[in-house]
Length: 487
Image (tube, rainbow, N blue to C red; front, side, top):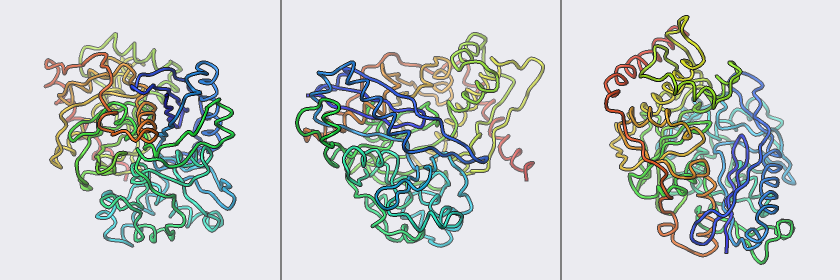
């Protein structure tokens, strides 16, 4: 028997096949059309692009691993969180999806919190523009003709599930990022829904990530040569899926994700909100487990941006920075290109370079970008620590984890060893596949979601600790000073 994990990202879809022992058998990917930004701070994507990429990725597996794909018994889904996919009657997509890194609804967040003073207590989170509910509040005010047609609001992976199974279903981890979930009770909150004028009828049915959400449609099973009944698991939001992929499901186990966005993630045995530090408190993808996250909106996306304006590829910039690295650079970068969540909760924050000189070249700027993102992770660690949260084990996932320098910077600044799995770039897809296995076989997540093989362990560079503490202090002083100047 085999199991398929499908990870829906903003830049593309990854599909991963595993066997009953969790070993990877084959993988494939397909690019999506990049998000569009009609105005500063906006970010949208056509849901049809996710479906096209999903079909393409699984079709590639059919071509390369036909016999392994034929024996699939369970499919798990992972996807980028918070996206508002609006469906009308007959499942018509009403407008492009407003994505997780869209900051247009800052004013609506304030209105929502004023309308329901218990919002933070119920949801465990500050109302942030990235969450789904404020986006609907914005639609209600600025696009009333669209709002009136809403029949269902789905997150990105729930939309793909609908096309795979015909079912409206969401898992707890992804639902926790909507701002409509009572995270402690793991159920939709009528009070939170009412703030945006919606009811439970607009929401998908809720299941745990390791539970069955539906069955794969017959025509898709035939397309991919799958025999027999194929179940689709509840799955997980991308970060909870990565945690399942690297085995971070027990208290104090966590990971650092260097993807388009950046995440410092730690599992909790109970619902543990800390809204003062803009920490996210969500349900995990497995029953009776929760997690906390510090979230950076522009992690590798900051290096993507530098790549575009310098005309050099990311890998070239990263290699150049590593070749000339001797310690903290003169330049300092604030990575707030799309605003920031943790710890500032400021959709209007913007990125900055400080300390530029005639010596500032692409390599030095690349180092500054990597250091700025690293300091943002250090910010997240600080507010998690303020809440009494301890991280005992930290693994690295995401495309940025391919950079040895970046991992060394993070290990040094967090003062923690970081383990790098062999397949760090497929954490979300692996976690989704593991959830598919649990759903199909009724297996216990504790026995399935073990730590994958570790490629290497990166230790902090104690010789640079003091220098980076000084540089971090300068970094922290810049944000309030620049924000004051921008007023």
